[in-house]
Length: 203
Image (cartoon, rainbow, N blue to C red; front, side, top):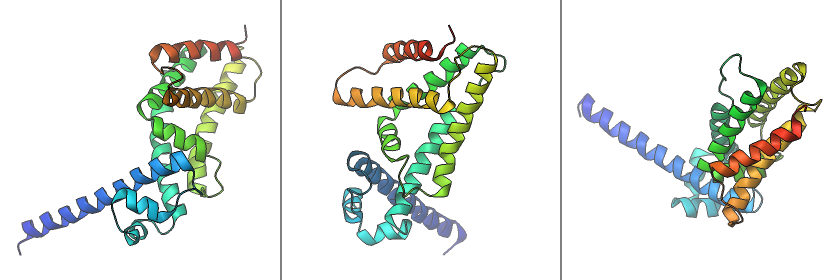
């Protein structure tokens, strides 16, 4: 067998492996999002992904390893989107708007991810690497709040409160949209942004 054929077969095997791993993560997201970590058994994830139970353990040693891999995948994507650098010198109000618009754009594109992260971000099964991704987000919020307070643009609030307000609002809009209680569109996001800003602004 020549090198080109060997390379082609190796790539096909790698593609198949990537496909199975992706299917397992997608199945886990669907099940964990709706039923929580403790409400889902590994055979159910395998069945939903269309693979044998043993295949799950080929890619993830335990159910905890699977939920952490999924959490890190989604949280890394979220952090990369929301915490990307903003233009230097922007007024506080515009920085706040940039972060909020990124949050809600991500939430509208990835509602399942938002609901999963909202349900699982305090799970005892999350490992140190997963928790570090949450701390990255918290540190960015702390920096924003510290700078905004120093300028006198927002009230003297604990950064955790600002995170709770923004994350809670985005997650809440996502959940209410899924239930049909409201339409989570750009207009709704803008209206919520104004309400959140009024809640923290030093006016």
